[in-house]
Length: 489
Image 1 (cartoon, rainbow, N blue to C red):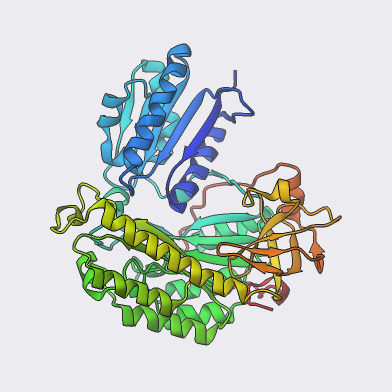
Image 2 (cartoon, helix red, strand yellow):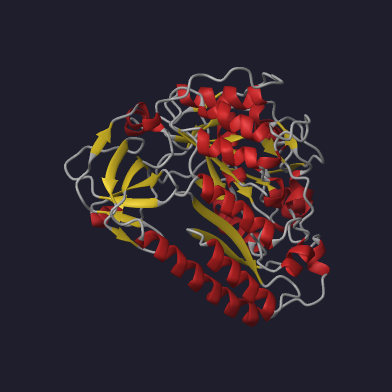
């Protein structure tokens, strides 16, 4: 009998993409996605360890599953990802009903470990210290018919004092350009219109094979693939940001005028304590260069509040940079103490009350700036790639939701048009809110796409593992027509 699976993903885009690989492997091994309310035969948790409450969230969820496991001993529970890499045998000790624990370096082992646990009737824990196989060699069942992740690297060579990721993901390992481009082409062949190039430190791509300009070349080459309409990337590090990447963004029609670049703090003293090897002047100069080349660029960021030793003066410096940078949005975080990181041992750990008060002030400022920028979008003509599941109130408002070329979320009125996720529409912004835009006027155009056909049919792309090992970019395909690009109209 075919066994069903369900994957529950916590954390960053890396984990989301890893879960696509896990799904691909399970389906190749004969499993099927669980449908409806039927309990799955296998539940896989792909975990995150970045935030302090990650542990409590996982163990609480595992606790809720214990009765289901008791009622059905043949049900299997697997835990992978960063928290599994960190806690290892601790997971089985605290939740002995777990069947499999696997780490970030051996996600390809999951089907074998499940079979072994079933045969041996005991938990299987396998955590490797280094990468077993590059994830791109594994098949992937994609979550979206119209948009896909493509990893350019895994791991990170930075030593930020607040971050536990390098110890869990390992040193940076780069894929060869030919492998990346082959995976992009495979997605385009399936009808995907938008690809996001993904790396823990995406713009340091090329360090392993000695080409510091590799990422800019990769953007141009990906943007030259016929049929690919939008290219995005996340997340770059300011220390590795070079002018050739800005030129590639500005000169390649398919590359979106959107930049997500973590700031973390606006205080140079705090940046030094964080071991972030740039200062605010450098950061702001990058934004100036981006906006000079692409005045329509939308820039977003990450900011941490309450890093150990942060003074009110340090925090005010962060507010000053937010005012000057004028981010279209920001992911704001309260500092989370993670055992095993240097920052966890620093003096000057701040009280929850102080951190919360500063966090509230920061969020207010970020929202005010974002609202001002969104109000400036009113009256602008936008091209939207229609999305699925991003508008929580779409059903009650009779709207649908799409992403503009600059990454902004736009809720629009489809009228009588039969618009599907994956289609492309044009409309005019009628209202700007702090976190989204509204377009309640008639559609100016509606283009039905292969991605829309497949989305309507419930078909999600499945891509095989890519193992070309090509060392160079080669000659890119002709550029797609500008109508499909991400430069603003």
